[in-house]
Image (cartoon, rainbow, N blue to C red; front, side):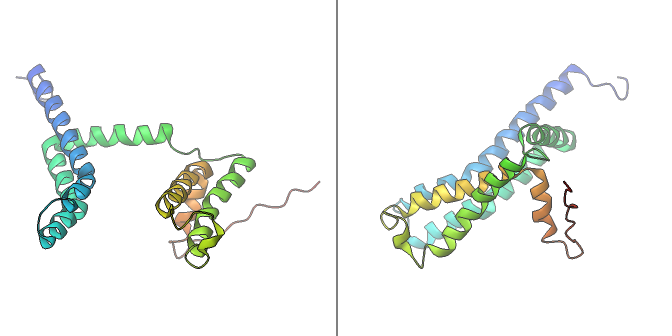
Length: 176
C-alpha cells in the first residue's frame, strides 16, 4: 500500500464514521427536547430534576465530544468546514442598506423595551396576561431575527461591547 493514498475501503469507513458522528451530534443537540417528556412522567421529582438537568446541560456536551471522537480529526474538520460554509452562504450580509439597518434596529430594540416594561405595565398589550408565552416567543423570535437583518457589521459592534480596548469610529458627515 502506498502511503498517503486512501483506499476505497478507507473512504467507506470515513463516510460511515462521519455519518454516525453527525447523527450522534444531532441527537445530543436535540436531547433538551425530551425534557417535557421527563417532567410529564411518573418519576419522583428528584429524578425528574436530575434527568432534566442532564438533558439540558450534560448530555449535549457529552454527545458532541463522542461525535468528534467518532468522526476523527479529519471528519470533524470536514463537518466544521461544511457547517461554517453554510452559515457564510446563508448568514447575514456584512453591509446592509440604511433602510434594512433601521428596520433591524426597530426589531432589535422593540423586544428589549417590551421585555423590560411588560412586567411593570402588563396592561399595555391587550391579552398579555392570558397569552404571555406567545407574546414572549414572538418577541424572542423578532430579537434573534433582527441580528440577521442588521448584518455582519452589527455583530462587530456587539462584539466591541465586550472588548475593553474597542472604541467607536463614527463616519465623517456627508457634505452637500
